[in-house]
Amino acid sequence: MAAITAPTSSTVQTLERIGAHSHVRGLGLDDALVPRPSAQGLVGQTAARRAAGVITRMVQEGRISGRAVLFAGPPSTGKTAIALGMAQTLGADVPFVMLSASEVFSLEMSKTEALTQAFRRAIGVRIKEEKEVVEGEVVEIIVDRSLTGATKTGKLTLKTTDMETIYDLGTKMIDSLNREKVSAGDVVAIDKASGRISKLGRSFTRAREYDAMGGDTRFVQCPEGELQRRKEVTHTVSLHEIDVINSRTQGFLALFAGDTGEIKPELRDQINVKVGEWREEGKAEVVPGVLFIDEVHMLDVECFSFLNRALESELAPLVIMASNRGLTRVRGTRYTSPHGIPIDLLDRAMIVQTKPYSEAEVREILTIRAKEEDVDIEDEAMSVITRIGVETSLRYAQQLITTSSLAARRRKSARVEVPDVRRVFGLFIDAKRSVKYLQQHAGEFMSDGDFDALPAPAPQTAAAPMEGVSTA
Ligand SMILES: Nc1ncnc2c1ncn2[C@@H]1O[C@H](COP(=O)(O)OP(=O)(O)OP(=O)(O)O)[C@@H](O)[C@H]1O
Ligand SMILES: [Mg+2]
Image 1 (spheres, helix red, strand yellow):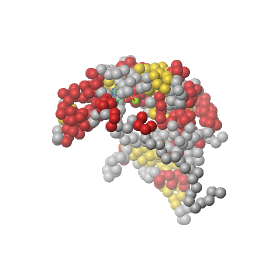
Image 2 (spheres, rainbow, N blue to C red; image 1 turned 90 degrees about the vertical axis):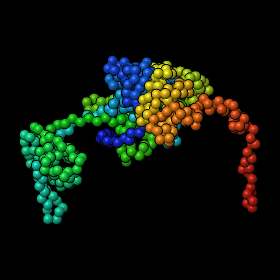
Image 3 (cartoon, protein in one colour; image 1 turned 180 degrees about the horizontal axis):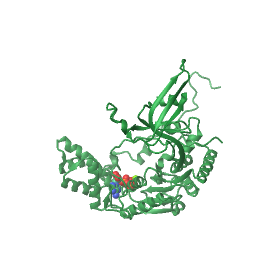
Image 4 (cartoon, rainbow, N blue to C red; image 1 turned 30 degrees about the horizontal axis):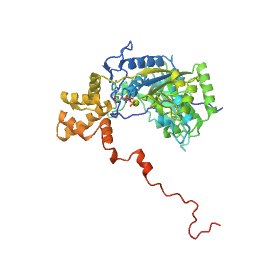
């Protein structure tokens, strides 16, 4: 088998945007995992937040995997918000994969392959590498070119605060020094095995000589001690990333294109074996993370039975599901089940309930949202929006914040007042009023029954011969 390789860590920049959950920064618990009434963007829902905190702690300690948790509760009671709070608490090193159940239904891969990939994305492999590096401040680089320029030789002088050594340079090293634009005064690290050079920054002692340098120049201390040292580096990749890198000729590029296709089960088996070996040699550690499947009632019976089995496999993450359904049909079957999830899977799950909010909690959530969206709302207008939130839905009230701030801006006011709320409340109706209107004006709309009354489409005359073409 070809050597299994792991990707190196990379930096990804993300763009912050005000989204439905951008105010959520964690679970808002204290050290004993007791929820604060309102912290890190989350309000109330204390029992569920505490349960989420306990689960998060167990995941961090690596004590829970291959288990299922279900967040069940009415719409907009914070199931998704709490899951995102968990993700923030887990930190960057523990994988948290979010999947909306409907994403599983794709034409490019089978449902089970999509789920398998999600499972493997939620399992991290922390790889430890010990590297022999030469780290020091560049004192001088001397390059001798041969007459033809084809071969280059040279000398590199590096120092620490305690010693100084001259290294011989070959063509390859000279080229990489040029590529990295290394000059005297830079602090560099050279990986002895690969010869890779990385610039750590400029030495403080040279800071004053180069006052015309770019603002992004980083100044570092000249290293101390020996020039040669062993360094331990760790990075975490997911099992899925290891699969992809080893499955295709284009390797890791497929990760960026997202076009990973289906991965052969044999390859996955080989990778599992390899990771097992790495573990035994102490080179790697497996970090089971979290797979969050939102709107889980959208999965069908085949996916559910796959989940049952996959949860029992050796390398399984913690699976968290969320559903706002009551007793409903399990997709792909004729029978109903609580939350739209088959009983046998429910039986394996720990169920956490979310409950509707009190008026005070709704007000607090809406106040946080207004701050997040930078909208200034007068007290009385806030009371009106809160009442609306209690009587219609939290989500509708959140929409009113944005729209009434636009209405306020139109009349050149920086503050939202009651008439602004009233105005948008009249312009945009909520679901309840829409349903009421539908019931009152049923006759004016097209309804299911009307389609039966429509004239049937003309029968397809497939066998009708075209004019002038004999069908003999
Ligand atoms: N306890 C809370 N604290 C702060 N914000 C909350 C809280 N609960 C819900 N929200 C906010 O209210 C909105 C609706 O909540 P969320 O999307 O989490 O509901 P949900 O339970 O996932 O609903 P659904 O079943 O419809 O998916 C979101 O903007 C969410 O961030
Ligand atoms: Mg949700």
